[in-house]
Length: 177
Image (tube, rainbow, N blue to C red; front, side):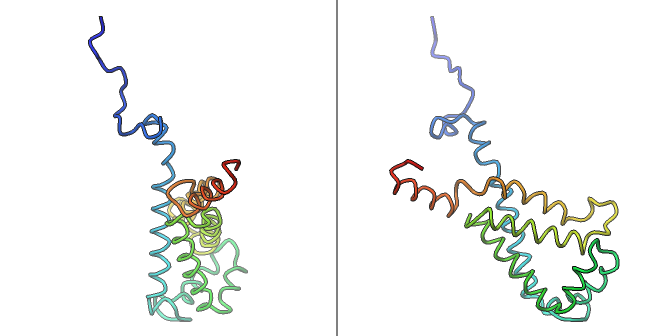
């Protein structure tokens, strides 16, 4: 005789749409990464844009002095030379790029494109600013590059503007998408 013993081990609130807790965890696995990268890149962009010392050709903490300091130790000195032609313009490009990437990741707007932008920014910073880090894992730009790659591949299929657009397209096409 059965005594009404529960055989499931998953709390009922995790069974959204018939999913078990592992399926739910897998479904949302990239969300913490997306939030972290979005907040970090948004903050980095705003920090650069509001730092009066950073957006200068020279002086302590300036983009110009930073680029000159890393020029000889970078993997691609020609890339640094290109930035040094207009350090302030390069500083604004990096800051606005970080801001766009961060906001795109946070709200899930063109997420794959935003993640690709974040990966390219991280790659360029790794090859220039943090290339000389020894050992290599002390330089955070390589880690950021690797962190962006899952979002390049997966995008933001939930809790995002992208997923809202996808759902609307699916509804308009009668679910044939």
